[in-house]
Structure formats: C-alpha cells, structure tokens
Image 1 (cartoon, rainbow, N blue to C red):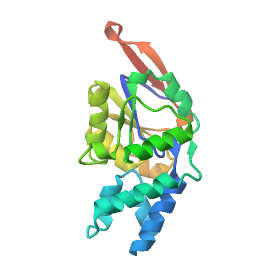
Image 2: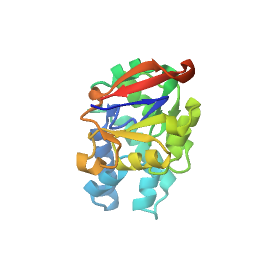
Image 3: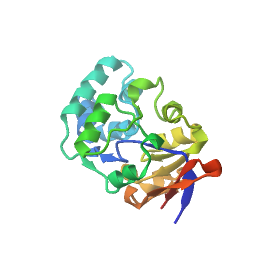
Image 4: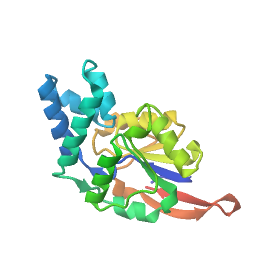
Length: 219
C-alpha cells in the first residue's frame, strides 16, 4: 500500500486510460514494412513518443510532416480493439474536473476520438502533440499540463505506462506512477511507484493547509 497528496493529476492517454495497443501496433507495423524497417523495433520506439519524432528518429530522410498526416489518418480509421482500462472512468469521476488533465503524445483529433469511443469524459485541459515543440521524454508536455491547471509542477502527479513518459515526468519535477500495460514491469523501474493496474488507484479530495483542497491518491 502507498499514498501521496498532490494538487493535480496528469494522465497519459494510450496505455493508461485507454488500451489502443492493437491499433498502434497495426499502424506502425504496416508503416515499418512499407519503409523496410523491423516492425517490432519500430513499434517499441513509437510507444509513448510523438509520431513526428518517431519518424524523424527512424527515417530522417522522409518528410516527417507528410508521414505524420498519413499515420494520423490510419490511426483515426483503426478503432478495432480499443477499450477503456478498468478503473479509468471511476478514477476520473473521483477527481475535480479542474484538477486533472490528459497529456498525450497523440494529436488532439486522435485523443478526442479515442476518449469518446472509450466513453470517457473529455478533459477540460488537454496537451497534445501539436502543442509542444519537443515531446516525451522532454519535460515540456507535463510542464504545459501543470501550467494549464494553474499548478506548480512539483504539486502534480503523473500516471504513465512508458519509460519515456516517466523520464519526462521526472525531468519536469513530478512524481511518476506507472502501470505495466505496454512495457514490462522491469522496464518501468524508474517510476516512483509501480501499480498492478489503474483499477488499484483510488482518489479522494482532502482539506490541505489553509483550507485548500488537495487530492489523496492511494494504492
């Protein structure tokens, strides 16, 4: 059992709130084959990273903007197997709407569609791939999430499923909780706490100093 208090929670989307791994695997595997790369390696690199940066890393000779547009279209069209993770809806409902945000490496259109298909509420604050110059593992996405919530970075907790997201959270000065949905537990060892699943995480609002509302997370 563990617990901590914070002022806000920043959720990664894919692999944390929704399971989109089948679609991600299909889209990136097809792209890899088309361009002569190893599908398994490309999929491993793509998880938790902005698509445009994945393309730039693997195939710097390609027009990354054109590839991004094509990849986004494919992911928007591929919804087979998309499911919400157990505990996600309950957890979001337990949090004040102005105290949580989604910070995703996907585009805003893709994130919105996946949240809607999963039946999850659209967050008041969403940080998507288009809104930062550098994606995870750079700290910019999570720093932007804290800014949108009007909170100090150190008062936010991140929930992630990828090593790049954990690194980004730590570089932003935030505590990182991880769920082993996409990567093996051994690859998530840098997280401050490793959960069995999102269903394990509980959230309640508690009074803080000066009567300010805080969030108690328990697992």
